[in-house]
Length: 270
Image (cartoon, rainbow, N blue to C red; front, side, top):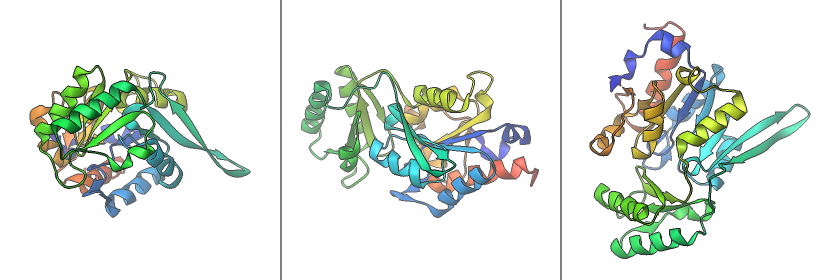
């Protein structure tokens, strides 16, 4: 991973899309940092498309798409995308797209995984935002006390895989779902359908910022990916790392990335 300051002016100038994880990429300790939120506005006002890509639920994504300065949001680790379409003579209209491989989270396999995981780890709990989810099961190992070790999250992921589900470890949850999709597959679907983005020729028009193992598909796919500094907590269990890394962690690291992009696009300090 190279320091984010090593991004070239040409790389920054070629960007059209800024994508980012939310938890521990825009937030710290569960709170959205003011610098990170201001950076979303700054990037959007500079003419860039701003799109969070998160494991958070559909219910959160409805709020984010409506109230944040974003051009859409991909949620539940790729199960869905929500965005507003402007209407000149009336209020914007919220639109949704659901991945064709998405399976509702009342699937019996998910119930069996939950039972096994909670039996093996009595201090584990279903995430408090589960009521707002449509497609996945989120098991909380580190969002609230008591915090379980990363090894517990890895074991919970393995239980899900043994049962034939998909599973990813984030900085706070183990997200588990049926269906063959992830953050990357929905990002590519959303960008191509919404903005006529082209895979291959458009790869360097996009930068993705993240912090944890569930961001690996995005890190592996896009050459200009960036980890905030706390991604280094997970490098021992990740196979693909981002191209760049910030010096600061969490939302401050994302603000560092945003400031770097905007400065280099303007030829400041390069």
